[in-house]
Structure formats: structure tokens, C-alpha cells
Length: 349
Ligand SMILES: *[C@@H]1O[C@H](CO)[C@@H](O)[C@H](O)[C@H]1NC(C)=O
Ligand SMILES: *[C@@H]1O[C@H](CO)[C@@H](O)[C@H](O)[C@H]1NC(C)=O
Ligand SMILES: *[C@@H]1O[C@H](CO)[C@@H](O)[C@H](O)[C@H]1NC(C)=O
Ligand SMILES: *[C@@H]1O[C@H](CO)[C@@H](O)[C@H](O)[C@H]1NC(C)=O
Ligand SMILES: *[C@@H]1O[C@H](CO)[C@@H](O)[C@H](O)[C@H]1NC(C)=O
Ligand SMILES: *[C@@H]1O[C@H](CO)[C@@H](O)[C@H](O)[C@H]1NC(C)=O
Image 1: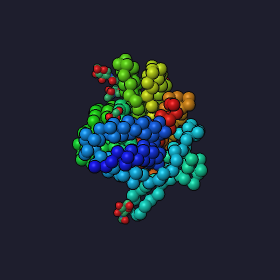
Image 2 (image 1 turned 135 degrees about the vertical axis):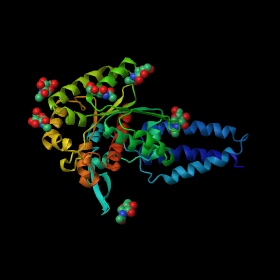
Image 3 (image 1 turned 60 degrees about the vertical axis):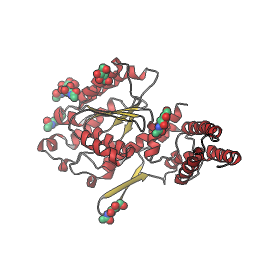
Image 4 (image 1 turned 180 degrees about the horizontal axis):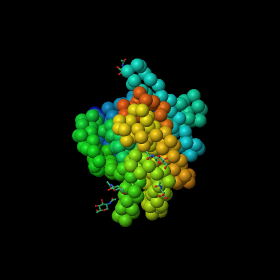
């Protein structure tokens, strides 16, 4: 058995090194402090109990070594001093074709020192689980929102957990509810092809006095295809914005994200009706309608997840039907959301 002194030294090392490792992963400072505190308490308990439970000392060194080893750097925590500017830089992404098999990868543009200073990170399964631990995430919208949910879960779940999700989530035009006990995550996907559906949902939430921690919304393609009236789209977005007000007045405000429309490649669209209605002129008009509704911060409540720029930059090799893009596009949007959440939760202090 390890002596009390060695154990004390070990405990001190863990309390110092694990937060440093976490800082290396660039979780928010808040989180690091929380972990440091939590570790200190559990170690204090462990140290006191160890004479009675010798086996405790067996697993502590193992867990600590692995977390320190897996941290790639020991760089100090970057304090984001201009969070709004970092939020605005989240889409400064560079795409790169790895080889001719049209496998695309992306990374944040690091040649720009402003982007570099924001220190954006692609979170892995453990970090994203920590970030969303205990959260209720709701994603509402059309097939773009569904693809976004798929990428979100793909990042957070293990492959064997994903098998069931893929089957259920691809039942067309239906809602989907999932609780991941392991992470303490509650996730709702709400099928909402029109802005009216989003407004209806929002009013239901405020009637119920319930509000998700993270609310991702997006809608427009169905309206463009079946209504073809960008003025009406603009009006319905304003109504949505108004319906969100009660939710924003509460004590626990949701983090709101708007999932933008993808770049539509007209010649690749798979029906005659789509090719006729979803023209570049229509896209332009709908984009103007969206802008004039002022949904985005600072004028409105939403942070944009700019699927349009992400899909456009990934390009036509990233889509087979000119509308639904490869998972990598929605993955990038998920990582952008995670980084926005990190920035925002830091801001809350
Ligand atoms: C292309 O790159 C991906 C990822 O690095 C790799 O898995 C795949 O085998 C490569 N394909 C070819 C044809 O080299
Ligand atoms: C999530 O947080 C709870 C306490 O808030 C903790 O008991 C649990 O272990 C955490 N889960 C993960 C995966 O971090
Ligand atoms: C969405 O809204 C449209 C138009 O208001 C309505 O016809 C449709 O039933 C709604 N769909 C859902 C799933 O609520
Ligand atoms: C509001 O609560 C009712 C009853 O619990 C539930 O059926 C409904 O889905 C809730 N609405 C929303 C938008 O959460
Ligand atoms: C488009 O919608 C606006 C506002 O809802 C309405 O006033 C206008 O008449 C509609 N235009 C057409 C061509 O239907
Ligand atoms: C869609 O609306 C625009 C503007 O009102 C109109 O010019 C265009 O012809 C419409 N397109 C279709 C396919 O109805």
C-alpha cells in the first residue's frame, strides 16, 4: 500500500496537473476551477478513506496518468478579452481537400492572429459531454436541423449508441426525443418545416414555463419551395422573434442559435419543382428577408450557424442533391456552436 505522504504528494500533483491538462483542452476557466475543486474534494475524501479502502489507491494513479498523457499541450488558459469579436470570427474556416476521393477536412484559419487569439478548439466526445452535462438541448427545423442533430450526436455518442439513433432519426418528418444518461443530456428534435411551426413551438414552451438550455432553430427551404414569398418569410420571422421574448425574460435564458439555409446548387436539385422555385434569385430574396427580420445578435437573440457559407465553401463535391450536404459541413456547425457556448458561458461570470 502507498504511504500517506506519497499519497499526499500525488494528491497535490493531481490537483495542480489535472486543471492544467484541462486548460490545455481549453475548457472555460469556470469549468477548470470547478474540476479542480471537485477533484480536491474527492481526493481529500479518498485520502481520508484510503486506510479503509486500500483498493482506492489502485485506480487513482491510472486515471490521472491517462488524462495528463492525453492532453496535447500545457499551454496556459487563454482569457478571451473580446468575446463578441471571437463570436464573429467563428466561421473563419478553411476547407481543404485531402485527396481526390473528395474527403474534405476543415480547420480554423490560423494565419489570422485574431482567430488564433480566440483559440477555437474541436471538442472531442469527453469534452463535449462535459460541456453539455446536465443540459437540455432542443433542435427544431427541417432536414438541415435533422442533419445537424445527427452530427451533434455522432460527436457525443459511441458508435454502438449511434446505430439506433440513425434509424430513429431518419424516420421522415417526425419528432425525436433522446436522453443520454451517461452524459446527463436531454435532446429533442422537433420537426418544424415552417417558421410558423417554430413560433408554435416557442409559444408552447413559454406556456409550459419550460425552456431548453440550448435552442437551435432554422427554417426556410419549405417556405421557399411551397410559398415563394420572401416578404411573407420576413414577416413570419418577425413573429417568431416576438414569440421568443417571454423565454428571454426568464431567469435561465436559453442559448439561441439560428441554423442558416444551405447554399442551393440549382442544377443538382432533384426535382423539377425545386429547380424552378429554388433559383439564385429566390435565395437572394430569402436572404434579404432574413436579414431584414433582424434575428441575429446584437439586434436579435440568435447566434448564426452559417450553413450557407460552410456549405458554399465545402463546395459541390460535398453534396449529391445540391441541398443536403455531407456530415462534415454540419460537424463544422456543431463545433462552431460548442465554441460559441464556451465563449458565452465564460461571459456569464
Ligand atoms: C483519403 O483520405 C482519407 C482520410 O485521410 C482516407 O481515409 C482515404 O483512404 C483516402 N483515400 C484515398 C483514395 O487516398
Ligand atoms: C455530470 O454531472 C454530474 C453532477 O452534476 C456528475 O455526477 C456526472 O458524473 C457528470 N457526468 C459526466 C459524464 O461528466
Ligand atoms: C407546420 O405549419 C404548417 C403551416 O402553418 C402546418 O400546416 C403544419 O401542420 C405544421 N406542421 C407541424 C409538424 O406542426
Ligand atoms: C407542454 O406541456 C405538455 C404537457 O406536459 C406537453 O405535452 C407539450 O409537449 C409541452 N409543449 C412543449 C412545446 O414543450
Ligand atoms: C407576400 O406576402 C405578403 C406579406 O405576407 C403579402 O402582403 C403579399 O400579398 C404576398 N405576395 C404574394 C405575391 O402573394
Ligand atoms: C416566385 O416569386 C417571385 C416574386 O414574387 C416571382 O417573380 C417568381 O415568378 C415566382 N416563382 C415561381 C416559380 O412561382
